[in-house]
Amino acid sequence: MPERHRPQEPRRDLPRLGFGLGLRPEYYPDILDGDPPVDWFEAISENYMVDGGPPLRKLDQVAERWPVVLHGVSLSIGGSDPLDFEYLARLKALARRAKPAWVSDHLCWSRHNGTHLHDLLPIPFNDETLRHVASRVRQVQDFLGRRILLENVSSYIEWRSSTMAEWKFLARLSEEADCLLLLDVNNVYVSARNHGFAAEDFLNGLPVGRVAQMHLAGHSDTGAFIIDTHDAPITDPVFALYRKAVQRFGPVPSMIERDDNFPPFAELLDELARVRREAAAALAVPA
Image 1: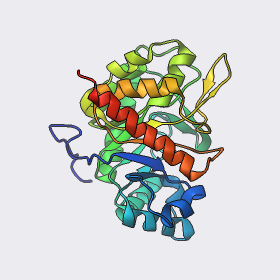
Image 2 (image 1 turned 180 degrees about the vertical axis):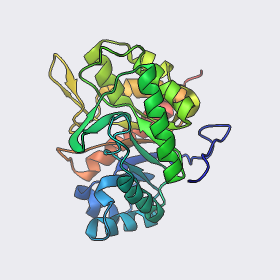
Image 3 (image 1 turned 90 degrees about the vertical axis):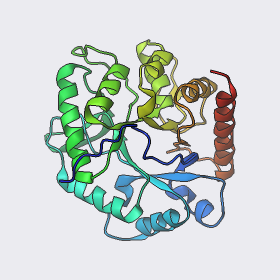
Image 4 (image 1 turned 60 degrees about the vertical axis):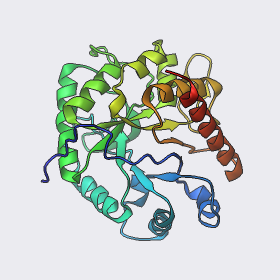
């Protein structure tokens, strides 16, 4: 296995891509038949981990014109099942083909006793889990020959065995495993509302040099709790939290996730334009 990459400045080797969108089949014609003002695209890894066919050809066409990144949903880095090296081999092959700027997945577990649960489930935040996950992250990074980004998930339940806040766990994990972080601002807002913590505490608890990408998305508010659904526009409170994140972490590449109730592509581009404006306004505020 290749030697682990340990630069002195964690984010130094990653490009500043700007503002992107999730690559979704619903928008293939709008993307490939035009020249939309999008700086980069994020592709769901599992959708393209095949030997051939139309989806892979579409990804090739997009990657010829824009930078791409790969974002996975099946790594189950926090799970108790052994790491799936067949999955990782397919991911590595896809990365060789697509040449992504980086590869990411979620800090969660989604598989047990060989069964995929098709959900991103939270892990207990304690020292035992930290050692377990850090070891697995190092194995994945050694196998892929690159550092990965791990995303905070939205959560609706908590483990009684947790002994530290999620942001403290992420901060320690990023240092001990030498990985990077994908900050999902909407997930922070969702979890803060559901569990009653201050969203700003989450932002302030993360190391600035480790946050390498941000996600934005919409959610569903039931009143009693909110659900990360990716089927609606970004809300004003999430934009407000995004401005605070930009003030803390700087011009980190940011993108919109939309996975249901797809609007016309022009509306999504208008929302991305607002993301640009919000970031510019946040950066214009003196520290």
